[in-house]
Image (cartoon, rainbow, N blue to C red; front, side, top):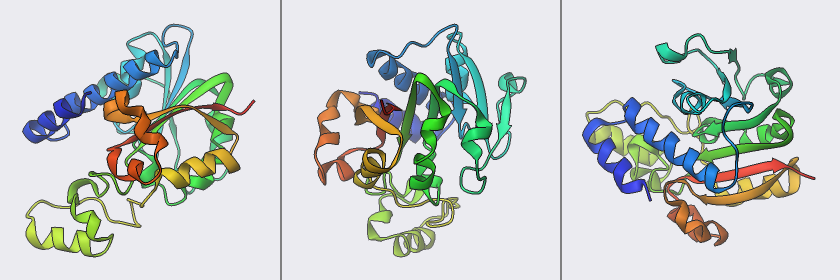
Length: 236
């Protein structure tokens, strides 16, 4: 369980590069537990890559990584890597243009999409035969659902941010229904099961994957999963 270490790191250093490296390394550990091979000969897409920390950790294992996001903010050590500019909300046919891979990583992106279900319906097109999609995001009712204005998000997407702005001197980046959208584990799982070309291989709370039973309990999972992690594959 890496959650206590992440909280300690965040309290002392906020979300610095080491914080994201810890997240990535733990996710890569879980992928290994799930039987996903990560090494030379494997192609991967770090979709919504941000500074490229997750993909960079994969590259250190010999994985051939392509990065993609709406703007190139890669750390200097990744600047020579392949990069594709894409906006998953606005770009029609984005999945076709991105190509196909053995592994697609979409980490902490879904809650920032206005129409995540629409993207999920075509996400299988990114996968090679036997390819896998690692999808993780912060569900709205999680303790961190409002990001920097958590736990005030439990007061709602309007009142919560307003109260945060009134009592905090720290500038708020996330604005509900602008760059942060309430998402729910149940509805995402229904979209995957009924309306996409994907199927779930494993599901767990990202920062304490040992307690994966939480994801099988409707209602409880919405509050008890700090972040939802899914390993998906193309429907057979």
